[in-house]
Length: 414
Image (cartoon, rainbow, N blue to C red; front, side, top):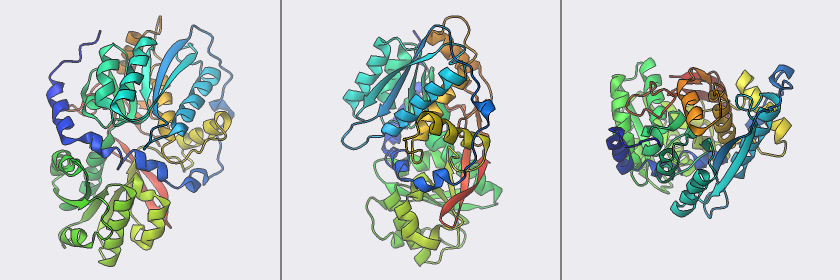
């Protein structure tokens, strides 16, 4: 059994106190509201070589999937459908995982401690060789159970401290920490010396932004000012006015779609000319319609490119068209695809019986693995991406620029 008790627990404890879980509604779940029309903005399809006739013929490998479904506040069945599409694709066209057909063991969590704990225990009882978690606010509940049983826990974007620090946990992208680091890198490349972040005043979101964003921006020579915006604020003009002095080169908006609407409207009303750095919820169609030109030219930091002619974006749309044609591929659907195909790619080096230990070793030793739908981002889960958060496998993000109200020109930000 993997011993998860190490010095990283102190980091995990600090992250837990900062309340990273509170950020889930603002970041992950609000993504489901993004504009579905953009997901089919190009007709490009993957070449036939991406679908070779290569069925898996070995002994099965059981892979777990935990996805929020059926809860009173959160239900994202399309994430599961995307993961199921990847399983069908891998088993028919990629030889499964190292020749072993994937047998999926799925569990629907209701995003509460009891049901998420039950799902984690179900994975241990099913003796799966790895678990993919699409999105959750309860990583701190599940990781100790799953990773503690020696089973790799993999998620496309971790939020909790346990998901970012625990041995045998793997977070493919940088999550909130990676977003802040990428924003800092971008702002530094533009020569900005001061940035204001407008952050939803929910739980510990603002303290987290200060604690994690301050060092990230400071390393780039930038002074970060965090301005909290109370939840449900219909007019954020007073808060925005206080944060857009002439020496501020750029602003960041970190919150849900409603908060983003309020801040962007205020920026437009005040005639603010600062560069804008946003997160995915700001692409809510209602937000884009409400704020008009105030969002033009803004840069949105996300973990996937679903709309361009990049080979990974085209493959995403093509796999979903072939194996889940009725599933809406916009919003947060891609997390099921990104997490499951990320595991399939990272675990191809498995040798011998595909046990949990063998899969864990394969993931840890795979380097520069292409992130599914990642526009060229690669990940390595060897602890080298961010030393203070060793479970993070990449800190790169996809940055898109808003043009005519739509994401365009995807770029990789380190």
